[in-house]
Image (cartoon, rainbow, N blue to C red; front, side, top):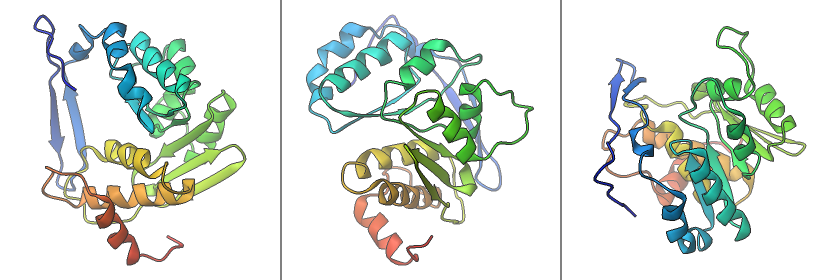
Length: 231
């Protein structure tokens, strides 16, 4: 659903790729935040209530996120949050919002920022970061670590999912692909299988030259058939 706000500006982001397909971003800020109100979210309450999963990012002001999550929680909708882009310093309301979600999916940089750890601090393992975020009141945390894969902490369970190594054509949108796939698989299978399937979808995305469509379920199934279950 798209609503055009004539008086609002449109954000611009330039993406730069190196020879290995890894990306860097240069953006103009958060112009897209202008004009979006809680009333807009309320207008589409039924869409959120009818969903199985609400997936959100931090592209929106805190009151907007809180409103959408409130509607989802009231309707029993599973909420996944990708805390990006994450401004520095992290504000207390960001942590409070994440505590209301069912699953938080930060990368290592975002996890460290949420924990108040500086960029120059010693490298932390994904599982340690995830455990520390859960200790702050988050129900489930999945910390992604690029080529190292990801770690999901759910109560006392630790799920480690290595990345599937492929020749990378383009890394842009990898975290979005993971979160989108997790949103689909989370309601159809167990958490370990959901994370494994989502990780496989990222592998397919990374080696895809045609970015007009995301990998679909049967592609993921076919890909996983050729990979031992232990991976």
